[in-house]
Length: 618
Image 1 (tube, rainbow, N blue to C red):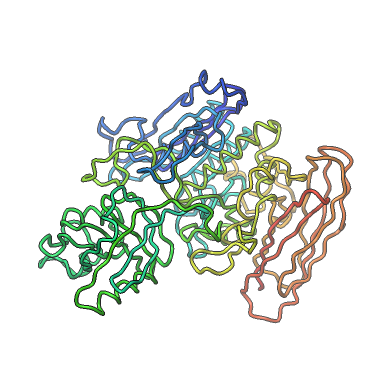
Image 2: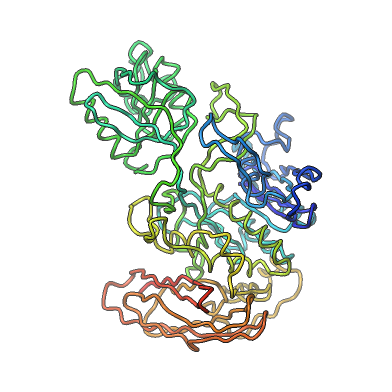
């Protein structure tokens, strides 16, 4: 729920962003190191709460970050270089945001839900207006909600006005995966970001009394004596007499009996009460350690958590092994090893389980999410107003924390957008988006197709869009798919918007074309939701590199024959545009309703301008 925007000019850059609690603003990039000293980083902060049903108490009516989300997302996008960044000495190193020389401003729009709607539409729109007025260059919006029609979506409306003013809007895809059709912030003028894993883990092993060794994940600050084994007990076996077995299995607060848990390692199930709260419950009951096991719904994705006692989070399969061991012996024991930071893990990246998936339920002809970026176990700045576990009983305070979510992946791309805005200040938001999308990767560090962490099978564009972000390649994309505000308005016309609805997006009269096909909307991806017979789509690319000739190649799609006309495009100067047509013919003999995936690549030998293709057979 955080919105970030930026201006990029020497020492005057601004980045602003909306996080679950904030919008922030960043400024233009600087390449002179001395400028880091003379330039202020945070150049403004405002809060917006007039849309709340209940007035806030004075203690909450502040721009200060009270839950850490705003600080984390803002520093990810545009934090300075900071040596020695770590969480309890884990992940130690130099941290920086994607646009480290940018200035930032924060616009706080989200509040505790007890006061009404968490992020009121009126306050989101007011923050967008303020950021536009302040002249930001990038808006990073780690905010989202239920996917609705654009004319009822405050983020879609506000971001349209931002794009109209040349501001690139980057937004989170949502954390409702892996269920299909859950992606949010799906307006085509928004840059929608899913989450991927990175090649770093914080490992802590569980050693069982039967000599089995199970890998877990943790950020625990404390450790158990080396090689010492402790009695092992489940939460259900350690429950108070008046507590339900369900609550005790989750190790909810006040569910464990200190007489049963004291001096033992407690095994609990991951649940809605929160993993760090589980640790607090175990610690208050006198446990020396915690093993937190995923339930079947949580699956095999485990996140690093700042536990208050020695702990290890394990996946569902390994959790079942631990429970089976406990049930197999009268005196189960275990030990938990200290946390180690492991770099270069494989395979990575994979699509995070929680990352919301397509298809786009508002308009399946626009593929969403657009791209993925690092969003799992991300180290960035944190507030000192709350503990890293967010528990009232936890009195620890740290300047950095490790969090996961598409709120974390969004500002990674916002930082890249800021760098591109510095390099190419005249590029449109659509051109910047195209440069990042068409240079993305779809293979991991084992040179295999990216995997979906939820299934360990090959991921598809419905999960990662065009692929995972590659900042260096985006600086030299070769060709871009560009769009203007009139193109977006014509798109809305194609969606059936009349004059009344268009007024939400533009104050100027707009004459809708007599005929318009959304299939020809110049997006850097192609999605055909119901292919039967033959369908043709038109696209247009602009040369932003050296003169040259590009040839088309198609990655085949099952049950579809594809042709591109013309097969080559020759550009003689920068800014020259060429149009081409892709024709799809269904040869499908399988089941209707199946999705198939392919790719169009334009290559001149140096650049590979890639666009994902998603087709659903009718």
